[in-house]
Amino acid sequence: MSVQFRNNVHVTGSGPVTMVFVHGFGCDQAMWRFLAPAFAERFRVVLYDLTGSGRSDWEAYDRAKYASLQGHVTDLLDVLDACAAGPTIVVGHSVGASIGLLATVAAPERFLAQVLVGPSPCYINDGDYIGGFNREDIDGLLQAMETNFLDWSRKMAPAIMGAPNRPELGAELTRSFCRNDPAIAKHFARVTFQADIRAEVARSTVPALILQCSDDLIAPREVGEWLHEHLAHSTLQVIDNVGHCPHLSAPTASSVAIDTFLARALRQDGRLAANPAV
Image (cartoon, rainbow, N blue to C red; front, top):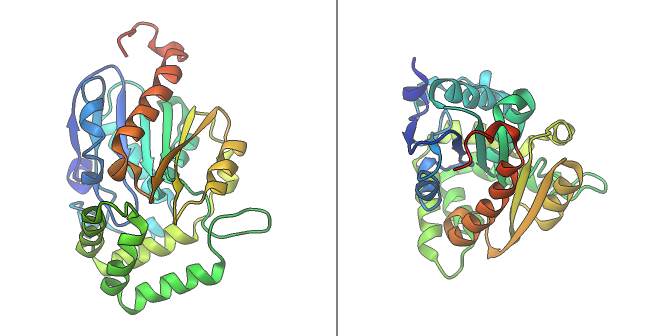
């Protein structure tokens, strides 16, 4: 099976550097539509759906392979093998940020920079670590999803989106959640919300932008601060925005923050000396 078919890959733009976008739980590559086109003017842009999400090949979703985030990391590297040109910038949202970070640990030589949008290495509070949820909260969330996935989606998606002045975005995220196969979504949710990649964070040496919202139900400010403290060569940028999806609800602020970070990170990377246009 081709990677392009399995992950519904789309490539646009051109340039000496590839920028790959990794969406979050319950979403698909369409969630990047306000950001990706602008970057296609300078980069080779790769969009894809995580296996089991969007218009990927759902039959390729192997529960054993995707019992941890590493299965999705392998897919990301496969996509880059097939579609990337030159070094890569990975932009990931939510659990997609974790997948991107783990890829930079697995193959650091392939990446120039990483952008972590609403990231969380662990959603569960643990001693001094504030992930935003008690274990009982996560267990209850997963149980509600098991009981009635569609009802859970209709209630949770608008809260996750935030953006109180733009209810159409909450409705869009609800539709996105509901389009997923419930069995796959429930399995992926357990992998996502029970993941703990804190031990891997310090192993990532690729320059990173941590892009957070000022009011985020899923990834509180403490998470971004923890990441900034433990992730080498990282920059923390907080956007004044309510919700977990600033690439949709605050695309201009997100784009400016990413551009500012990349201007510095790419200028400092010696591999681009022959390509000053980047």
